[in-house]
Image (cartoon, rainbow, N blue to C red; front, side, top):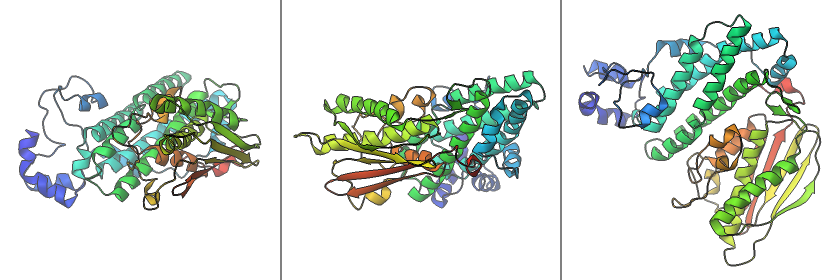
Length: 418
């Protein structure tokens, strides 16, 4: 029914690049055509809309309410209070009143953040929004928005514990969101401009980092680990993280090439450092994996030069330099390396992403190699708390990657959770 109703109007809407909800639906209504939001179901659904149902084409398709007034209302609400890392640390006193106040804030804040992401999806061009992976992610966000919005106001200890269990389930529901976004990005790269896609994904990834951090901090109020302030690890030994992640990257190289370059430390100097260990590990695995793979590709028929690492820092930050002799990046490609969906990996390359090699909840949080999310995601993690990730290339010789990460325990109130 939907396809018959859309057939005559679809090509015009696609040529205009009309947003798949806000601009597209009024035009369809004016033409007397049933819209996606008002089309009756082909068969009556028996359960909630789930991300999986949108990818399973053997099941009957029924409409998801892309235009929802509740989403619009929540997106317009903006709390004048800006939460920072310092505020999150202050709630870790674990007094009952602090835990309850934190849950009450999150119960109000999460729907607003989720609603703004839903509106971003609604503004995508129609043909991009029809991609099953984008639709699956949209359904996941909509499901989270409705669950959190429907949760009763938190006034008692029991309600707060129920809210914590809801947050744990949401983390699991969203575990494959980044992988689906990466797949959708690759499938739609010819249907949308690179600038528009990069802008959309940058906002989505940055918001996702903030939402997950808020959720994990609330859960950490109930299960504080030694050496951690909530989700943040104190006194991180960066060299130990480099060694552990490099061992995983070397496994990737041995699987693909049968050998891997050695890792050589040129200098190690570090002060006490507080950061999110998952973010640090992801930045490192992407940078080291790229360095090892490039070195193996460049020196297929000869000895492999080592990958050099330098670590230094102050009380305020930690800086790393990872240098390889993998041939560098061509000058015309260098400006594109931080574009989502841009990759130098061949389509038949089976090298897996760093996400697959990480332990813990983050291991399913990303795409396979070749989808072009590695470096952009690594830079997003590095920049979230005011750090940076820069790539300097000498074509024909190799690359230097400079990573700077801020110590969030120094002036924590200066780091907003965006």
